[in-house]
Amino acid sequence: MSSRRKTTLSDVAMAANCSIATVSRAMSQPALVQPETLERIRNAADRLGYVPNRKARALASGQSDTIGVVVPTLNSPIFSAALQEMQRSFAANGYQLLIASHEYDLGHETAALSQLISHGADGLVVVGAERPQSSWSMIEAAGVPIVQMWEGRSGHDRVTVDNHLAGYLVARYMLDIGHRQFGVICGQLQNNDRQQARVAGIRSALAEEGLTLPRTQISEQPLTIAAGRSGCMTLLEMLPRPTAIIGTADLLAIGAMIEAQARGIAVPQTISFAGIDNVDVAAHLAPSLTTVDIPAALIGAETAVMLLRRIREGARAADEALTLPVTLVVRHSTAPPP
Image 1 (tube, rainbow, N blue to C red):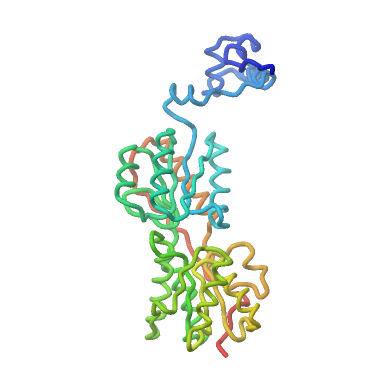
Image 2 (image 1 turned 90 degrees about the vertical axis):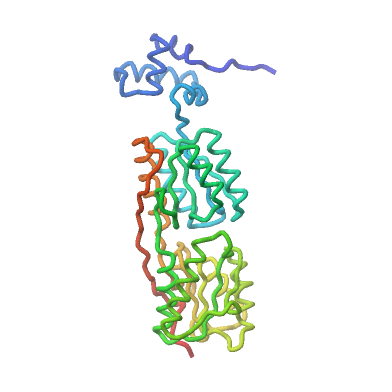
């Protein structure tokens, strides 16, 4: 089998008729190189198929040009939307995303963060604030800039939304149109501060009307459509049966509505359904889903802006907070109770 020698910086320098130092400068600081020389070097590099050695560059510069992002799951339209916006922004600024997921296992998240730090990521992005203090100590000891998304703790940069308000808004609307019998399908509450806040917001709205939300009226499920169907099965066994079912994520609400319709239950004439997130498909269901808009793409975009600014400023620790608005979106899956 034939093998081809890897193209080196020296090969590019020879092809472009300039020094190795000039080629190196063109790769790392192109603004310092004359335009005609830069074009000649880039043409030579393209012709030879030269790819810069990131490891060597990282050793020389102290930067890896990578951003580590750890999300709970990749099987989520909201995290996908945020990741897409981050990828667009970071790529435009010369950074590559390194993405890991932990499936709501904080031990796996700690391991992923440790790997990203050891690989020299220039910045980190995480979802939520709930993780062991040992993980925070590791992050702080590494001195790597970090931004939290959706929820966040003080002492570190964060781009958040008011998840408590999101839960409150959807429950308050259901109450205002007359509902008093509620069921809730939520994600696993342990280690998930976003879901905890949304359920707390629902409880706050119900409390204004002297109502409670007993544990028996809550079904904890994985955040999938199939799990929403399973949660709905559980809630439909309640006596009295709820006239309003809230999914604390749209995927849960969508699954619940599908299950009800499969059983011949009229939506919203018999049971109203609502979610939180406003994923793209929510507007295209029959009936379309009432929900609370969580601006996932904007969260990703603002997170990138904040982290890029922090990296450029060279600050080890910061405490900037940006809270984005959440908005109730009333559609056709809700109506007054029968």
